[in-house]
Image (tube, rainbow, N blue to C red; front, side, top):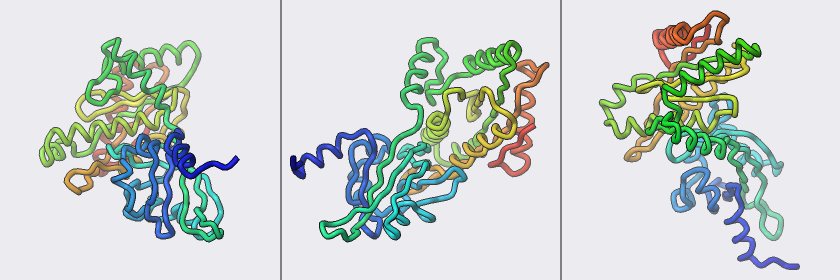
Length: 300
């Protein structure tokens, strides 16, 4: 059975994975509907642009730029070897999305390499997060701006983690997070842009959260992450990964990239802790991160 060309195009447009083609100079020549949905960028916004223009600004787990550095797609075009990787894609709204990507070469009818193909899958817990938002809305425990849990829910969740630790000895950790120089940012760009920053920071947390993590807005530009079943080393790694992702993210305003950074205080729940002692300790370590120059994590 021979499949006509228009059938191939229909299939590509309707698959659930993002798909795009580039030529040998890594200029994007095709961008499907799923790529639009996952990234927020329409085909009109990216087709004809080069990957090296840093549109998607892929970064790895350590925050290294792949679009201007070691790009899997560029390497595959050069050595003809297919590759797979997990990276963090820049969404049009500013936040980072974890994606699993597969790249291969694009050839003409004679087998000559004319470009590359990238297929990428959103591996964030999007469906679970949408369900969580609906549940929090019903219970009036949602922060309307960021769509994260509000302070009431955070406090309730911390009490649950204390109870779980007491009954089953399940450890948990806290990330107390603050956006650096946020007041200055608001004064410079206005509160509407400031709100967009709060949303993209929140969305970075949500897109990269695992089922046993919860992130909420404590108030203003402060956020809290509650991480179940974790040790100090992994809590530090997790917090620094989030910090790095936000440092490498941005929102676009009038052709200008606007960046922010976060500072974090991290700590594990202790045997005789109360809500007050836990949050005061996390706040102390957050202050130490600020005093040490910001854009860093302090744990203890």
